[in-house]
Image 1 (cartoon, one colour):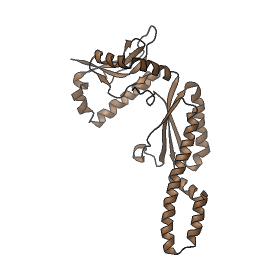
Image 2 (spheres, rainbow, N blue to C red):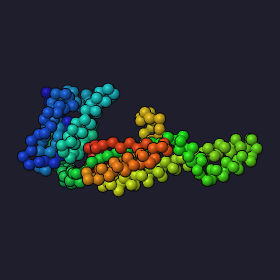
Image 3 (cartoon, one colour):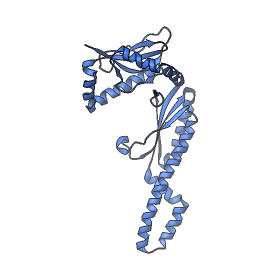
Image 4 (tube, rainbow, N blue to C red):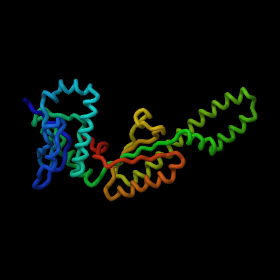
Length: 267
């Protein structure tokens, strides 16, 4: 039976290195995690059987949502456990090599880049921030405090009933535009403040309500690479924002620390 190499990620090789992950079971539930040294780098992997994780079999299994959900959760869970003990370049779900030679060839082609990347990631954590807002509440605030809208409403009140209806539709559209603008400006400004505590940051696509399961609308989704000595200040800023703006319908959701999913990309 041919054995493949399921790669979780790359870490720095340590002096007198022993395998701290040997008690962790791999993605097949049988083989345990192991280390393979390549100079300054070590691959964290587990063996998997080709009859279960071969290319043809895998193509069929990745169409089975329950299988994908279960195995993807395991992959993430293992990365989190490895991350607790070592800086890691996390690999994507189901990164599999047929032979050790294939794995070595990948490492050889990216070796210096991965060594440099691990040095950049050392002593840092990834934190994610999602900002939600109560759109109805924000619309009310914009409607009440926007001077242009207040003036327009006064003008509409002097019009005929038929004209009032048409102009009210226009002002509703204008309010929606102003709400979008307020969401973007507010979130972007707060993002810039958090970025001051980070060495790198990225803005991601917002999720819809079907994904978040929340009544509030997601209006910002971002990730930050934060030095360990700045994490407390980073989280304190989020807490202060929640206190200051929670009553206005804003929700701030910071999660982490994570492996550097968004900052460990290999070209």
